[in-house]
Amino acid sequence: MKRQLADGEQRIGSDEKLSKIEVMENRSSEPTVSDLVDGGVHLVKVACLGAEANDRAIDGTVPRALSLFELIRAIRPAASIHFNYCIDPQWVLRQYAPRRLRQCPITFVVGSRHLDALRAAVPPPLAANVRCVGVPLPFAYGTHHAKLSLFESEDGRALHVVVGTANLVPEDWGAKTQAFYHARGKFAMAAKKAKGDAVAVTANPIVNSGGTTSTALTSAVAAETAFVEQQSVTASTSTEGRQQQRFRDDLVAYLRAAYPPSAGEVHRTIQFWVERIEQADFSHIKDRIVASVPGRFQRSATDGDASCRFGHLRLRRLLSEAFSAEERQRHKTFVGQFSSVGSLGARPEAWLCDEFLTSLSGGRSMISASSLKLIYPSVENVRRSLEGYAAGLSLPYSSQTHQKQTYLKQFLHQWRIIVFVLIFPRPFMSAASPHVKSYVALDAAGECQWLLLTSANLSHSAWGKLEKGGTQLFIRSFELGVLMCAKDNHRRQSPGGALFPPFDIPLTKYSADDEPFLVDMLYPTKTDANGFRGAMDAQ
Figure 1 (cartoon, helix red, strand yellow):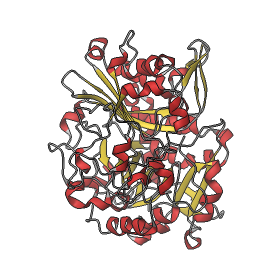
Figure 2: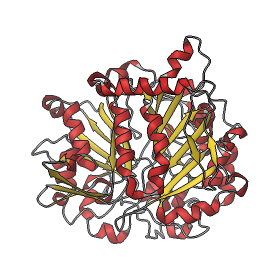
Figure 3: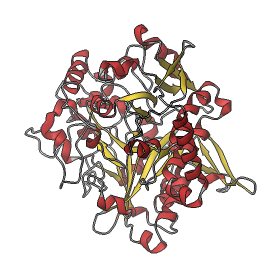
């Protein structure tokens, strides 16, 4: 579980550093929608590293890194909603450019524990069009950790889906290794527009927190709405249409399950967005949603196999459907890369190398624990990072938890990513500390066969734990990720569509002297460049 911030606390060193991040972000080159990979992954720009590190590609397959400012400027949203764990609304609103976009409806959704602080932080001049909504958290230690943004473009032609790993705070978008998945769904009216009909889409009104009504897009011809809705119904009811719209249906199913009528205000808030998603065409996207929703999910005759709807069992089922048994046998190494670790049990067989590894393999039996590799920053990785030990405040693995599962070290590997290396006299040190989370399968040649980019760290709360003899999955937190498979045709054909894990391959195993970074430990003999001895010292 991520450490809670005290009032007024910042995650990294100083106001000066945050200001530098914002200035560098806002000097970004003019982006366009064509800069966004449709159905692919972008790294988040590390502002302090400059263009040389951010814009270069690896083997020509990695798209340019983007800041939130660039992402929003490229999309130019007329309406947007952000689901996240931690949000700085003043900073987010400054990323909306041109300025007129700040006057459009913007909704922030967080866990109920963070709602009051979020509302208090919204600038009064913009409060009329900004809505803040809380999500009930039904279980102890559970969080609203999913990171999803939806944008309806200003021209009314498309809906943009962004599933990421970063909180909506400046340090997460300026000083850490992060990534986001982007997909664009065109509205049915776009095809009609191309034939010469200059008509705008009607968007449902969005009611802000003050009770007044704003309209995301104006309508010139009301009949266009009926046309769009009819196109959506036709596509959704045919079997072929359903097969082609799995990404869209996955996303709608997640929103409805995560924010049901019993959730109150957030359920009413998402109805507009559910309708717009259903009216968009995502048939070109073959990727699948892997989500976690709090609850106990059981196998039953009336509800089918509900235990496989979320968490690691959802991943297991999708992999078993995407790859044949023969193909899954060729997946030799499974890598988990994350920025936090929960209590996993006293033995690796308690969860990690049993139900979780089985899910990573797509349900294979008798899989060797040696096929599992984990990436988590070592003390040296954090000490030599861009932020030094201050980066460790976003790596909340505690000594108390680690002492109960020291076996974890046998699986651990260094954090390295060559694209974000500073040119210092300390080669091969990755400058930007990771907050990205990813899980991949590699074949014998080290080629990535599937990649899951997700908000989920390595924990029972995020992925779920089997109960009642394996017939029930218990999940505490909200999480969201996207599963991409290398075998999909569009991955080979689309620019920037190739799968690239956000870390270096081959992996570098911990040495005998390496230890995982622990947030509550001091390292007196290993000070960072600022003279700090650990995260608590840098706080």
